[in-house]
Length: 192
Image (tube, rainbow, N blue to C red):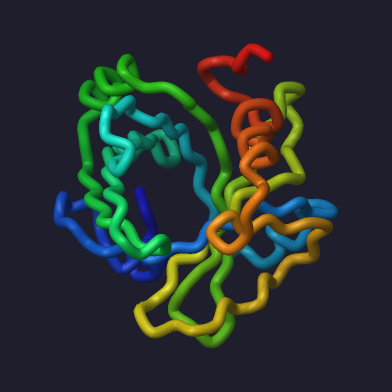
C-alpha cells in the first residue's frame, strides 16, 4: 500500500480519474547505490508489465507494489513531450493476472523515493537486477514536476554518466540495451 507521503508527492491516487503527468526520465550510471539508500525516505518493490496495445500513442502498464497493491495505468501522449494523460486504477489480483497474460516486458525493481530539497516533489529512482541477480548500477530516474517549473533540480546523487532522452538525441540504442540486455526481464531477453 502506498504511504501517505507517496500519495501526497504524486498528487494523485489510483482512483481511475485522468490527470496530467509532467515527467522527465533520466538513465543514470552510478558509482554505487550508497547515496540512494542514504537519501531515500522510503522504498517499494514493483513487479511491472507493459500490456500490449495497438495504438503507439497509448501505453498501459500493470503493477504489483510491495506484493499487496495491484494497479492498472494508462498513459496517453499529448502534444507536449513532457506531459501524458495518466489514468491509474486499483485492480484485483485476478484482473492483474489476466492482463499479465497479454503483457510483455515484465520487470521487478526497487523504487527509492528521494525528496527534492525545498520542493514538494521527489526523484523516483528505479533499481533493476541484472541477469546475474546483482543490482545494476544503471538506474532509471523519474522526476515529476509541477506546471511552471523552469529548472530541473540538481540530482542529489553521484554518477558517472547521465542520459536524458527527452533532451538529447542519439541514445536510442543505449536505452534499448538497458531495457533488453542490462536489466533482467521476467519474460526473458530478446535474441540478438
